[in-house]
Length: 258
Length: 267
Image: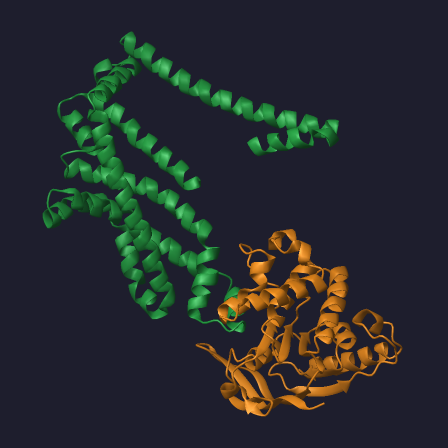
């Protein structure tokens, strides 16, 4: 596996008239091609800021971000970003929601409709092609949002607590769904969450951030001794609990220091 | 309600008795409401007619329903009524389109340019709170005793409120939806045309409903002062020659114009 993304000593601060709030301080890590990286941290530790920086929506106060060895400022972004909520536009039907990204980038061709039909078919949405978001379940909405992102063929997928708006049961199902899609399309992904179990169950590697200003506290490689790994199956792996305890301790250690 | 009834007929096979009872109660209730509404209208008109007839109300000042009817018929027969109504309607429509066009355009510009919106904010609030009908005489001096004055008066009544309301609606679009467009590689133009405008269609339409009424009020005020035709002109004429029956007839016409136009927007 080659190195796809390199975060090199980045820091970021928010400015307001009340003063400066450091959100991230000297964060560095790498992401390999095809890897699923989980990032956990206490709330307000700058997790979402980190994703906005990688997506190029914000520029770091110092440090650089490289994709395939090129600075993202020059390489042009090819990054898919899934927000906390699906944010499907309620005046567009499933098909029109899926094509939103392509429309914006003027990449919508007759060929893309073939691809869209394929994807909708594979992920069980084809019969809802003309339905509006209000008629879809929470899980279907997330799948539509993911297809919308995947159609832009991103090098890296950023998932910003994409399941936090769902109820627990749907959450487990959608996690399986989305994880399966990402693996099947062989995408590299970074998942941000405050849910430790979710991170362990989905990721190959978990990074723990400290509380604000966020820095990389510790990295855990997740090796689970089960066959046919899915996020749901991973939860019953024997090592699951140990990882949970280690990460939990790491997070709590943070809190006590404050 | 009509939609519900249609469902009943198409699915009547598998409807439970409890559901049927519920629908029956619903139909009865809506019917009862309509009957009360009609009773009030008929009651009011009959009371008016009777009291005017027996001299309890001064029929010179208050007229009576039958005299109002007669006037409407005679004015209708002479074509006078349609002529003046047409003029007012036309002026109202022109002002209405101008108000909406200007309102949306300026609101978009303010949304686009944060500094400009901050600069203009106090001026907009002042302009909006001015009593616009008091400005009408000034418009006559500036623009002359003609249709231009009437249109400008009508536009000035509605346009500032429209700008302020729409701008606030544009601003209150969810921040994450805007972020979504940016994550998909869109720029500010994409945000405007794919999120801000489409998500605000309902508020634009409800603003239009308000504007129909305001344009009409503005036009009639304008016609009071600067017109040779139109319903406002007729009302002033009527009051000057003491035909109060005219005024009563004419007050009802703008109301029906308003109701018709409002229906049109809803379609």
